[in-house]
Length: 324
Image 1 (tube, rainbow, N blue to C red):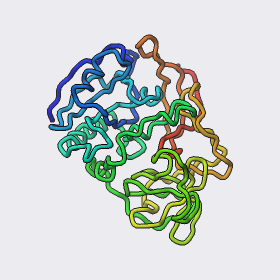
Image 2 (image 1 turned 45 degrees about the vertical axis):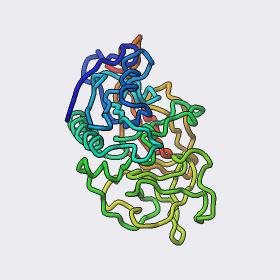
Image 3 (image 1 turned 135 degrees about the vertical axis):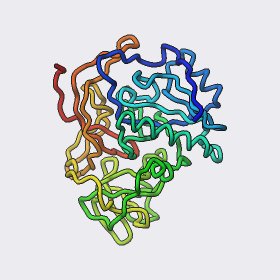
Image 4 (image 1 turned 90 degrees about the vertical axis):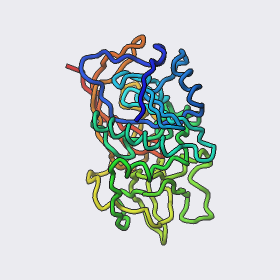
């Protein structure tokens, strides 16, 4: 893997100089929407944005701009910045074949190294796209990014990291279902003539590869799941079902308050109704990271459960306690 380093502009990231390593739970994959040289210029001048890594399209060369332990400003959500490493792929997502195979193979090698080093879980709840990052506030949802886009092949990527696709069994109400397809449309009713679940961007009405949602109902050839606070319907077909092994934890039951991050000041994104059920993807606990003039200070310890709210993740704060 070709590798080099350049320093991001100092005003584009937060330096982690606290005691102990930074807790890293996620890798966020982006598409630049710029060419390589334009992206380098953007990160090395004070534009208020950075990423840890950039992978070039033509040859898979990897450039690191921000040290892994420092907090790059890449996700558009401070909570996710604080807990993640950001990787930019040089690509324009609405062009044909936006990602090259040499670039994707370099991504696999980089992800393998990072997930090993920081013990990041290799699944779709922890290796995510920019389009899976929660909005920082409920009103900012329409402005959130949609990269790496619908042409990014999650169904190819995860097995390259050694993730074995589960054997799928028939869905069971009250159990998680998973799709091994890149995108599956969601409808308001079990009918192909019914409207999709929303009229908004594609991510608001689709199930993506590896996402886990609670099965809520059946109709002939249809599966109902709890999605974005409501019942949504998808067609039963190959590649969709209950994973034979996986999460055994009981689902979260409504009413559920979902926030943009685990910190106390995180914005509320949704109040989920009494009948709602959500699959718990992870339990996150650690000190809150606070940016003070470009340097990180540690705040109180926060706990939260991680769920899929819709195409994006959400946090259900559990408890907090002061740091000793």
